[in-house]
Length: 122
Length: 208
Image (spheres, each protein chain N blue to C red):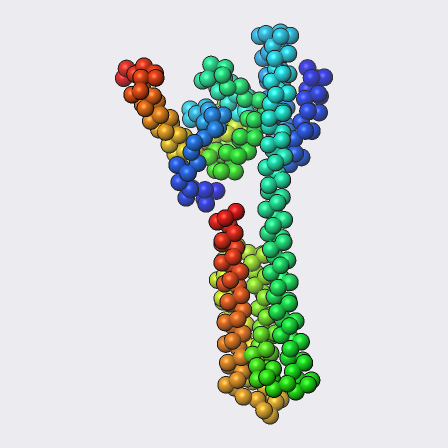
């Protein structure tokens, strides 16, 4: 895992949309598989539907690359099934997520300059 | 629900065993959650859509997992093949040196015997040094080239010491200078072989 910390976050870009949305879902806190799935469906207004194979295939890859880890504590043990595994964004995962968000933001700026999409008011 | 879950567990058999072992129970849990939610909110149509999504996901994700597993197995096989080649290569060098030496001594070939002291060192240090390097590299995380450097330095030094102590008593024609040159040649040769080996590994890693 320490080896992965030395990897430049930019070198992992661009992320696949499903991976980006999984990381985005974990940015607010630890979630289990079903929680991630619901969050992604909500963020994308149902455009990205993660099936079990795609979700856990991506989770396996993200664990291997050190972008997420299995969380030790559960957000609310009294409300939850003990067998569920929760996942947490690592510092490295956070860096990669920020880098990808920046990349997308730059692309949006270009599209706005070319008047493909309206400018957002800040 | 029970029947549906049983069927879902059957579908999971399409994924590699390792993946199933790691994530199978969680995937089943995810299926239970989705099934309950669909049953509650959208009835039969929702459940139909859930199955459709699961089959589409299966077609997309299962082959990907099998390909990843195959890729991993290929890299393990490649490493194993390289180790066998390295081992056989070292063994080949040692056997050739030994045969040359035996032939030279048996038939009194002066052109071979001139290099006798170096061939002697090459065989002895080659057997002991390569065995130690192989074991150390396979059982620890030490840098292979550095391990080879220190092992061959130490092995050659010890062998020179032992030969110097024993040789002068056993062999009346014993010459310390030849012995030293022989072991220096042996060290340079074996370390050179390991250096070339590590260089080729590095090139493969970059291109692979």
